Each structure stands twice: as C-alpha cells, then as structure tokens.
Length: 376
Image (cartoon, rainbow, N blue to C red; front, side, top):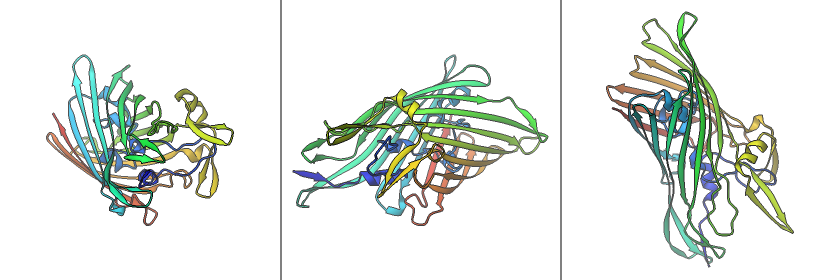
C-alpha cells in the first residue's frame, strides 16, 4: 500500500485558511487558490476591487464592471507564492477583455497555481518517485448595462485540482474538478461636486464560485467551493480642476459563504457541503471551528475580511498605492499592509505590489506581484 506525502494543510496556509477537524457548520473549503487576489493593482490597494472593476481583472473582482468598459486589454500577473518557504510555488493569472459592438464587453481568464514537486513513499518510508501538483481554473465573464449607472454581470469557470498521485489507505486519488458561477452588480454615480472637487462614487457586490464541491476519491466527502460574497464601495476625487491628479479610496468586505453539514451514522461522522441556497441562508449565523486543540465560535462580524485601499494617479500615467487588510485571528489571521505602483505609456502598462505582514515570519511575508498589461 502506498501513501502520499501530505501537504494539504500546507495548501491551506497558502491562503491563510484555518485547518483541522471541525465540529459544526464549517468554513473550510476546497481549491482555496480561487481566493488569491490576482492583479497587482488591487493587491497593492489592500486587496480591494469589487467597487472599482474598471479593467480586465473585473473578471475576478466584479464582472458587472465589464459593462462600463470599452476597448480591449490583455494582462498577465506573476507571483512567487510563499517566498518565505522557498517551496517552488508560483502563481500566474492571464486575463483579457474584448469589446463587441452591440453586445458589450466579454472577459476571459486562466488561473494557474503551481504547488511544486511532491514525494511519493510507501508505508515504510521508501521513496517511490515524485509527482507535480497544481491547480487550474479557466472561464468567461460578461457584464451588461441596465442604465448609465447600474450594471449586472455573471461569470463561469471550470476548476481542476491535481493535488496528489497514487493510493492513500487503499483509495485511489484522482484530480478533482468542478464548475463555478459568479453573480454580480455595480453602481456608478454621475460626477458630483464634493469640497469643490469633481467626485464619483461606486458600490459593488459579487457572489463568486457558486457550484458543487470537489472530490478527490470515490468514497470521500466533497469539500465545498470557496463561495465568496464581496461587497464594497469606492470614491474617486479630482485633486485639481484639470483632473491631472486623482485620488481613489476603496473599502471591501468579503465573507466565505460555503458551509458543510454534519452527518452521523452510528459512530461514523462525515461532513458534506450544503447545497448553495441552503449555505447562503445558513452562513449568517455563528461558526464553530476546531482551531488546534481549542474549539472557537466565530460570530458574524468575525467571519468578515476587511480591506482598505488608496490610489493616487498623476495624469493617468503614474500611480502610487497603499492598503490595509485584516482577518480575525480565529478566521485566517491575515493582517498586513500593502504597497504598490503603476506606470502607463501609450498601450502598455506595468503594475507592482508588495505585501508587508504585521506578524513576524508569516507565510505571506514579502509577497510581490508583477502585472503587465496591453491595451489595444
């Protein structure tokens, strides 16, 4: 009988999720790579973007934002993931948008997380070879205008997760797969005067990754997708009458909506994902989680993740960004500052972001993302 080197807990660390046995409705999900914020611009603004959504990465943040966009764009983001571990992990995100006259703007993306090379051993510890682990998602999105101020959007993605290879406990492990759907809305105000400066206000909402759970063995339970509710607001203000200098404030709130339900047959206890509609209703109550040796109960506020962002543009050519992101210590325990910058020249653009963790020796410390974009 073969066994596989265990690294699933390490995968959860990649996105700051808690792991361990859970005794009630649980928030632990499969394929947590879908939660990684893909573009350097939003990552430099405290992981905020649901109310801005004004570039191709609206596919991730809020597909309704595609409705107000014109023109075409392609962008790619690369990051060495968890650099503190030197674990040969990297993250790539390719996204594009295309405007079709009379139809609107369509977006598409490919997300790839390389989880490195893993060691396969038998029950005695004898090495039996190595295999590579990775996760992949690809999909399409579309936004349409209800009026000059309101838009709706939706998206569809196919998800493929290859974590392990071989047999564990007599069970054959196979790659897991699923599909996810997004539903989104966006409001954009007309320009108005605030403190003698031209200002616009946005508000957005996005419910992403709605779909069936992922299963890796025939008789194992399915783990739910990371169905996430994001909502937030943003305000952009001209700092001068010519509009050369602009300042944008953003604030996002996000929450994992997925839940598992406890099923007990005699002494056997398993957890199965709730169906989507039931999970959306039940995810507003408290959440009991086994955090190490301690059972913790998360109230509704503790389940929310919060981001704040700030962006300064000069003549839409040079940008400086900053932000702050917070999770409750019992609900991921990520807290960090972000910095970023951007350049635009003709049809080309470059964005950069840097993550500074407030906790020493955090797995996400010194994470950098680089994005290159092309407008045509």
